[in-house]
Image (cartoon, rainbow, N blue to C red; front, top):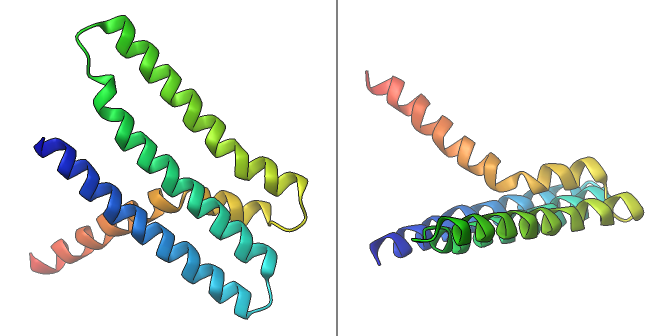
Length: 129
């Protein structure tokens, strides 16, 4: 059960930070009159966070005694997450209301938050040496 709490805490931490960053950046672009960029960032950020949550939830189902069942679950989870990430991309391509590059950046919002946190730790660790 300790692993579940750790995964859930990690999901909450990075998911909430990614959403806050997407909404904050979106509001900044909205203030500059760039509504399409705002919508794209928020749309991609929401789907990025949902994808990250699904990845964490499906983690426990991948560990199974039966290798074939675990493989099937892993492939089904991967396919579901790819389909989920395709939704904002298709929306942004077909609609002028969303900016496609901003949507792509939004889709990588969780990864950007994780990389920024580790980069910050790396920079701060050099200062202590």
